[in-house]
Image (cartoon, rainbow, N blue to C red; front, side, top):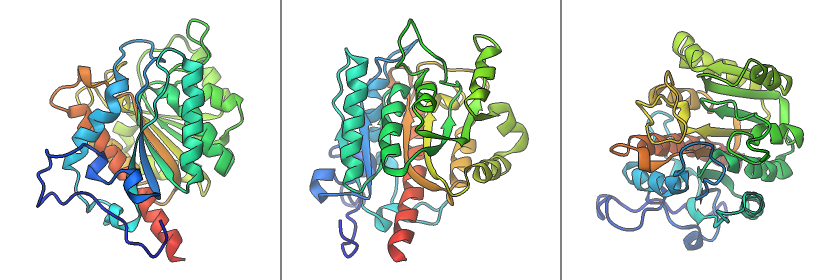
Length: 322
């Protein structure tokens, strides 16, 4: 899309009911309808890397269905993201559910193609395995990136049953491959039992800082966001959000729930506090709608993706205005 063109926005919900028509993200146009996009919302229906409850392969479409209620103006960020930049739904990346290695390669190749077309990615998972190929692709364009990882779990374990590529290992692989800036790595919202203290020791050696869910509760969203901004600086930033960072009261529809998590309000406020960071792409993963109730989890995920998309759209518009 050229800078002269006006972005094509969502279907007008005052003329066509929200529950009617295909469920693209936020009722936005498909990528093939606009030709190119500044932000491509893409699904990855893959959950063969999970270690407990499966079902996240259905997460992307559940988030899309819940996103029907999103509106074009975001008052929290004082922005109309779909008017500032062309955001489009790029559909799903079709991956092999029986071969994890092949699936990882497929996601990386598809992400490469979308990024080469000038898009930033807002990816809807799928399980957390997909973060590794997405980070590989983003690093090809930007070099090693800062990472904010919102999750109940560290996801820096070595292997499960000898498998290197699972939803619990992507960030160890990413550190090993040199695609992360190890001066700016943070977990946010971690909690719950571990296999042993060595898990924390190994994680620290990789360069990760940890903000637990208890830290968020005690210190508040604003202070945490300020700490994260200082750690990130002006580096290119990738944000990866496992929806189980939220307490099961706010996100029951996920594969590995842990008690004592963040509220959806805390998550959204921290994300909004990162609006000055150079967000180059993001993902929201691990929504498993079979365990959800009244779309609680997918609604939280859709609003999370909306805030991330708003940040990217604002930055794209500011860049074009220079």
